[in-house]
Length: 309
Image 1 (cartoon, rainbow, N blue to C red):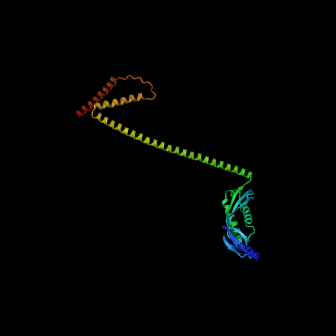
Image 2 (image 1 turned 45 degrees about the horizontal axis):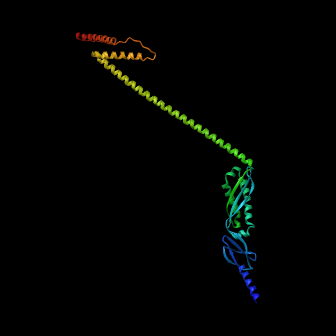
């Protein structure tokens, strides 16, 4: 009897252990009854029918990262490059991921590698090196669409490294150096051109300002000469009026002024270095007195003639 009880107890414990299933967080289990899928167990404590139900596949529902092995790709312009990358995916439907494809990770990896060769093989090398975002977007669209029936969401595909051959890298370096030298020469020529333009513009403005200055100066000189001529004309008119009225002092002043101006011009002549002239004040006064006497006689005769008439 004791042995029977022991057997029943052991059987009950085994039965209970097979009936109780605990699913950890981040995982989902599929349940199969007689080999056929029936339901999916979410994280937590679950009871299944022992010997009839069993746990089929244990699927990781967290986002998974898979490295894409390095492979050689021939570009559109026949350049050989070596490429590797990384894929991020997440299982959304445990049943589809378990029963729609065999070895889910390997299937996604091979699909990604195939599409890398397809997408990158349709591009030139320059576009391949400069448009990684475009390549990533195209790969993500194609692979995600293909893996949709598997209950998987491909969240991201990134190209990690693109390695052209060494000789091609050297050629690209020489090409980039030549392009930089070309741009530098163009910028230098543009700088010289701009400097010459600015210099010519400055000289033009200086010439215009100088011409305007000469014009203003000539205008002021002409105005000064006009005023001087007017002053001399007025002075001559005044002297003539004074002579006509018999003012002897005016005659003396006029003659003396002209005499002194003539001496000044002789002394300031550029072709005269030394001037030797017997110049005495008595001679000048005598000449002025003689002129005065002539003027008196002239004016006296005019008066006598007027009285006789």
